[in-house]
Length: 213
Length: 372
Image (tube, rainbow over all chains, first blue to last red; front, top):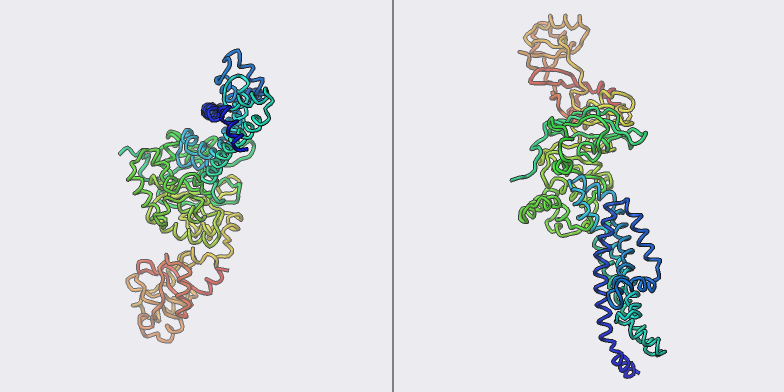
């Protein structure tokens, strides 16, 4: 059975597909994290805009991922680029929301102490609010990991390559073994990445926990 | 070195007519208070009395609706808040050590922002850990690894890292268990002596106030009721509220805070006789004035005391010859110690002496009446 699976893996170039997949994932996540945290900080700074921004991000979230890919076709064409754009758009919300929540929920005592010892508002944001929000931001990133994994896999439909491609092949040829192999493999990857995220979140929470009070 | 020092020492803090309202609720009403440089002023009162609000106006954490605060005659509104606060240490009950920073980084947060060099920061951190009696290895620990008392010590260390001449403390020992609190109070008094800073200290614990305060400002319902030295509060409470708060009716509780001069009987001139005088003359005067005790002096300096009966039995002698030695106290002596000494000597009477001159009498029975 192992030989059979190995054959299947080889004939569908799953190694190269995995590399494609993960590189798309990596690029998408990098953008998502940077943009998500930035959006979170910007709306924290301009609280009035928070509703508008969250509503727009929510609207994007309600569009099915598949439809989002289709919407982006006229702009970005086929391939990896629209897939990455779609997954970024899709995954900004959880990170931005958690960043915002983390920044606004910093303990009042810490803020007041910070002020009282002579920190400026910028210092308080950079040295207190953001570090203390890190566990929550990590939680948002974990959700984004799962979202991104899903959208990247869907990218197979619009010729983005990655592990979506062999899945599509499997579906078209009704090759149950291939579907199962790729599906399980994507699942394992998703779980592993989520596991890494969970570990990071745990370490951050431990380090940045609110002490033993 | 550009140290951004606004003031090297505090000469005075003048709080003039400040008020603060939150909606309809008055947090402070026309507060007037003068704080002297170098003193430890306690702000005390029930919750909602405005004591914390008053404290926070000094470093502009709260800005009053009207009125003015001057430090060394500079209106604090003319200082930039961030700069002002770096010149004023601040310690709160909740400690507020940042959980994501180790002790070193917690203490050196502001020095790092002010770009001190690394060696200077390390030296200062070690110096402060030493001052608050914690081992140097604590620098690398995180707040969650420390006990409440240790965290509070670090909070104090952090507040003085910039060597501010003024320190604001908002119930710093409030969250600690009673025994630890007493211990930290004692340590704090020691540290205070070394530092010689002006301190404004908020508490709701009257015992703490008496133990630490040079003067005590009593607040109630957003107003200042009375500000005075501890013994004055006990002896002359302005109203029932103060009297209740300091339990002035139970003076025996305050033996440690009262001094001999607070409870002595002032000595009027009719009791004082030159020791060179003849007893016959003295006895006559005593009889006329209706007194039975003579305090004898020579050249205004105390010699001792003489009893009317003894004077009468030796009418041909000088007063000096019947004068007995007597226990003496300085007026500044702590009352509890004075009472203990009297008890040891089985005396019921002592003369209070200032610069050799008799100024008052301590009578144990009178004392008893005053105390209970």
